[in-house]
Image 1 (cartoon, rainbow, N blue to C red):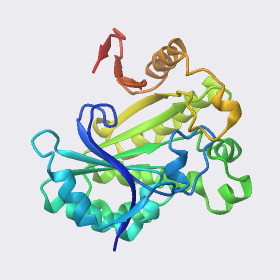
Image 2 (image 1 turned 180 degrees about the vertical axis):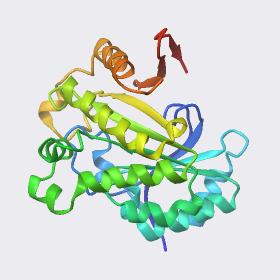
Image 3 (image 1 turned 135 degrees about the horizontal axis):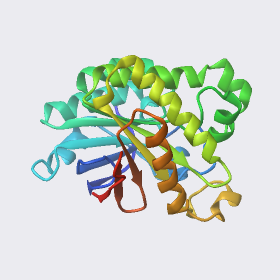
Image 4 (image 1 turned 120 degrees about the vertical axis):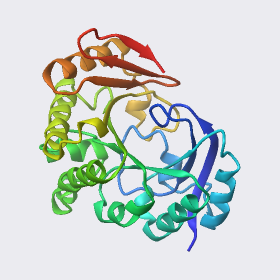
Length: 269
């Protein structure tokens, strides 16, 4: 069983909060987010089939520099059998494994749990508003509702919180796509899920800055400015004020900022 790979990066200090990692991009995605930065990967341009063992051996060359491999995409869970073999191979090499997912396939996450340490999941809009979720992920509302995508995303979040060491919960903030009220509502919904599991120590909440580029599929969004830093900061303060979370991270282009409750002290990571 092979995996369809777009490429990898030997060292990243921004793809996982607090952990340098080796990053692997798997091709293909079942969402069509209009602001996607990896559209060429979604559409499987310049991808190649590789043996999971070959990829794991390449990642293992960086042991000592990194202990984590972060598997992203695209949507890695679409390649369910190949992803399982890749995670096994990485574990056999002594590496820790993180998967970045849109949460639409919780059953795949459950199958690879024995080989996972960490998960990053995107909450792309309020889960209680299927119409906004459909707009955010670029799919018709009928598909979002018939496949119960918001419910599956919520289940994936629960699966991660109940079984893994850490779950990075990413809230994108894209101009002309997300209103501040949408992000706040999504944060409150995440709080409810985390509260039900009681694994507050595992939840890492991250506001994601949008950065326009030529790879963004929407011509309209390609022309929009990056998310205002002041807005991200204000949202972080608001979430800290209204929820039980004690710290919020902001992921920018090449850095991550941590904002803590009470003092709202900013720390650059």
